[in-house]
Length: 257
Image (cartoon, rainbow, N blue to C red; front, side, top):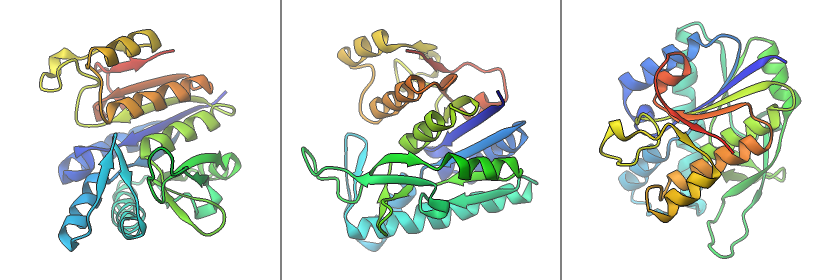
């Protein structure tokens, strides 16, 4: 079975010009099949503040009304996605930027308004495996943003971590998949201010214990839940860490069932 790397990049890596350039250089060096998934929530928040559109985030998830959907579509599928694709082309990594609507690549359904009405937020229902296989077989690296669609013309905001996990879980039927979540920290930390407090391994049992102790909270909870979901669908390896984890022997957090 061929190997496939699915890498999600977010946090301050995207916000910092030098950091994203260094990450993309490393990503381009990854051998074999690869797919990149990116977030962009901080940039979307900056634009919202600049133009005076209020926004709200609950449990690490953005409430997405019509005005905020317009902003994230412009920022995710436009500004960030095309800048990443342009930079990859400059280093001879042939890439194609995608939202979920492009090539019918990622279908989703609008989330129920109960118990919290998140607005135009979608939960993934189907990944177009054959479409992604066609691209990577042709040597094209898909670059996916956090926008899905419902098949009836409605774009939906879907968490980038979820996009990555859904892609990984779906592609696991065809490939030996490694899913990497890259951000500015070395991995999951016991003390967010102390990089040396890295937790090198988390399984379901330790995860539940850490939540009770308050060691894992806010946005890290849905990220790790996505990791477990990917593993349940047959993903070979899931890791959380700095961008260097994709091709260097550095420490990170390994997620296991």
